[in-house]
Amino acid sequence: MENWELIIIGAGAAGLAAGIYGARSGLKTLIIDEKLAGGTAADAPSVENYPGFPQITGGELAQNMVLHCKKVGVTIHEIESVTGLNLTGERKIVKTNRAEYEAKAIIIATGSHYRKIGVKGEKEFHGRGVSYCGVCDGPFFKGKRVLVIGGGNSAATTTLYLSGIAAEVVVTHRRDAFRAEEALVKDIASKENVKVFWNTEVKEIKGEKLVNKVVVYHNKADETKEVAVDAVFVQIGEAPNSQIAREAGLEVDDHGYIKTDVFQRTSVAGVYAAGDVTTHPVKQIGTAVGQGITAALEAYAVIRRPYYRK
Image 1 (cartoon, rainbow, N blue to C red):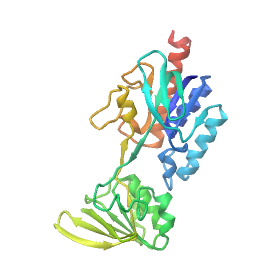
Image 2: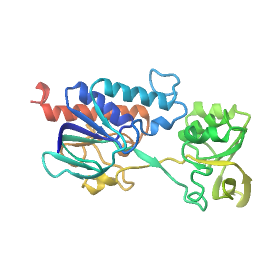
Image 3: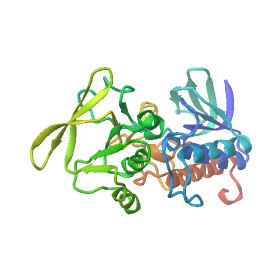
């Protein structure tokens, strides 16, 4: 069994920030992620609200964080899934599909996953016109007509990205106003090839081999119609990846988010959580980074007991 001082589960913005501060504090630090390092931030077509970067792609920002982590000495294991946690003892055990690890402290930064709308055709056409990542799949639909579902920041940034690729972008939002930042809403309004269907919900996704239309319902007029599209981009938010934490006994709220205090401490001593998997109400790269830093410094304080904690 490999021994570490700090193990971080998740290599998104929170996990990478925690890794940088853990390693810089002198802790032997390991990050484990079931996917490639970078997290959901890497999917963002454009990031314009991270301090110091007026505009940068999510992929570039995430890659900078990964390189920073490695430079300060963090070990990163990618494509390795955590299958179980034993948090009962003073030394915490992390089991994966490859090995078992032991650590003095653990930070859970497993992030979240894209929510699905749960309509007929969504599952059947996933990868054949249904997507949850505009920057990943948008280029496949150059010059086509695409539809974006949602009204928050993720839907707005995806709409703006696709407006530069697709011939037309149709946005459906079940309310009569966006919830996105005002700057993004203004940018959308300036795009001639973007059309917004307010008070509208997608009820079914249709096609043959690929998506070719959707059934939409106007919840004010009580009307249903079909709209021809070549792709559907679902952007309605995310749900926490907290199953492993819940199974290990950590307290979560009614929605599955891990409960933490101001020091990112969970209900189990020596275990911390940071980023989108926590109950923190603001889900942004900047807040995830701050939580990761706080968790790492608190773990360091507990492990090394510096002068200010004695």
